[in-house]
Amino acid sequence: MAELEVRSLTHRYGAKHMPQVTAVKDVSLRVQAGELLGVIGHTGSGKSTLIQHFNGLLTPTSGEVLLDGENIFRDKQATRAARFRVGLCFQYPEYQLFEETVYKDIAFGPRNMQLPQDEIDRRVRRAAQFVELPDALLEKSPFDLSGGEKRRAAIAGVLAMEPEILVLDEPTAGLDPKGRETILSLVADYRRQTGSTVILVSHSMEDIARLATKALVMNRGEVALYGTVDEVFSQGERLVAMGLDVPAVTRIFLSLRERGLPVRTDVYTLEQGAAEYLRLFGKGARA
Ligand SMILES: Nc1ncnc2c1ncn2[C@@H]1O[C@H](COP(=O)(O)OP(=O)(O)OP(=O)(O)O)[C@@H](O)[C@H]1O
Ligand SMILES: [Mg+2]
Image 1 (cartoon, rainbow, N blue to C red):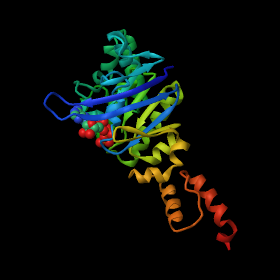
Image 2: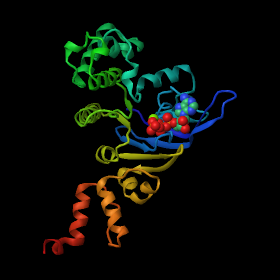
Image 3: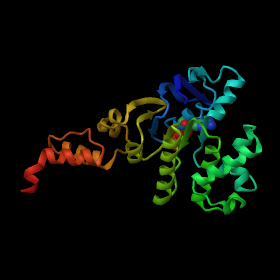
């Protein structure tokens, strides 16, 4: 299982004669095997730019990305290996479905890996089953699928590569609550069953609080906060100051504090909220 390390990574966009944008600035972090890292931050804070370095899709302007201690940009071979070990699912991945059939789309990655035909077939069917796409849909055109099915087909294409590190950029964006829940639970299942690392970019602080072991908060291309979910989410005031949406429970306790009540503000789960409520108002509340 792979450990991912990022050292002082900076990425500047900009073709000649265009103003340069420093999208990621001096980011360092280390993600241990089996972790679920949640990546949070405003629109334009550099989340997508950062994660596209993890499988070598983008090359850093400066800095390094290491997989098990080896720089993935060392040579072409190392970059190619990273492409297969780290599976990257883009924001709105369904726009990248392009083959004639769903089957061929899911098979695209494994085919690139030059696996034997029967292994490709095994992986396509397994991935489709994993994302709950019925066999009958495999021979259809991806354009005939519903929105949720397209999203799951695109994710299956990444899972079929059986990556050791699965990176998902806003995988639930634009889906209804049921579709969102399906995706999140299949991601959690994949991690549980394979022991893979998962890196999940999300706008939902509640989802990150519920699922992640570690959290990274990006702000204007830089790391604003990075630590365990507990370390990051207990800083509700800083998150709010950055204009981020904290979990509803945190919001309640922050506003109680604002009104002068001596409450803790490092509360981000319902259980913690209930405990803090009882500590403060326990008997009085019942009376
Ligand atoms: N291909 C590109 N060329 C030039 N600038 C870019 C390119 N892609 C992103 N940027 C700029 O880099 C910065 C970071 O963008 P990025 O897409 O990484 O942010 P993000 O956190 O993923 O945002 P969102 O939440 O909207 O997906 C922004 O200022 C953006 O405009
Ligand atoms: Mg993005």
